[in-house]
Length: 457
Image 1 (cartoon, rainbow, N blue to C red):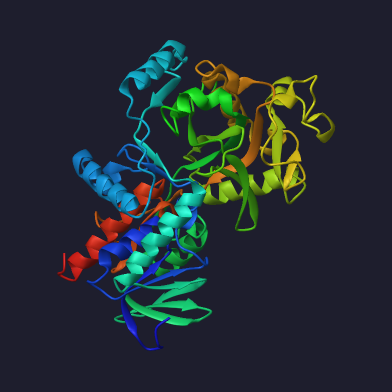
Image 2: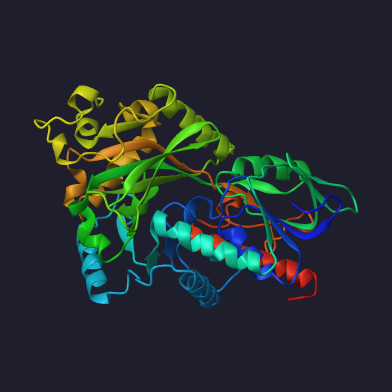
């Protein structure tokens, strides 16, 4: 970090895609310090599988960003080019129109109307690029070196404990390594820092509101089950309206030949998935997420998600996630260690990549999750099985909890400046994006807003 007393032009909190692309846009035009509590850059998304969704309709709310589709496409193309320049895989999925049309026809055949008069399953094709966790590390590393060579400084392994602001003075970021002063702050805390930043922002007087939260499960199937579609669409986006409750769910973060992984966030154990570029497993995993909004009474969806995670961990023994075979779930029984690989039950057809005992406990998700959410997850997989029959095999594994904490919304202008002057936000952790490309685009917008205020745009 710089000598005490220096005032930076911009302090960027978070070295994920939002923070990196903001720093890249500011480099050479302002003095910039990027802080991150981790010892490396890239954030959660860029360092866990590294999927790049190249569609303006995935991971972005164009209406909230006050951006047209054409502008979004141009910005996404520029972001994609930056990743390619630093070594991202040139292969793009989702461009074989003939095979995509075949899948759209198959989904259309599987549709039926719900009692509410809406289609129950659709497929949203998109162009995508996949780096993989291993290649993403190298790509982000090269990008970080490039940004640093342009004069941006990084303080990694630095946890920002608080942000203070005195009238007429610069922002003061309090860390264990000392205080950092900056005229502008761009907060891109990511999902890991979302809860901390929300509390900090509110103390500063930032306007926030509750948004929807995604609560779901991680599904693991044998690789051949999903292989046909992932060769066309690496991360196929299926959207559902569940028959019983008429709720919206979707598939998310598909990892062909990937692995199910544990992550710890704010003391909770959650499940996630990724895939390596160089080494594949014999399974594929993906999430099914149930979007939950709270209306009357309006309540804190972040706290709701934390309570759901805590209760799910409770049913895992306190320090484990819960896994259940699809066959057990459909029969209304819990999964047990002694039958988890039973040949009689056909559970030997798929061996999960996350073994029992490694932070995973066999159990019953219907005890751990609210009944409505269990209904929606079960019905979504059943609807998906009309398009891809093998997903409903008895051996399919269902893991919980998988919860995406990007539900707190921040009131901003089109440059992502909050109501607190000179405090900007970007990325998934502040609810402005859902994914690497969207977060990177956010970072560019915020950087442009800062430069515009400085008369350097």
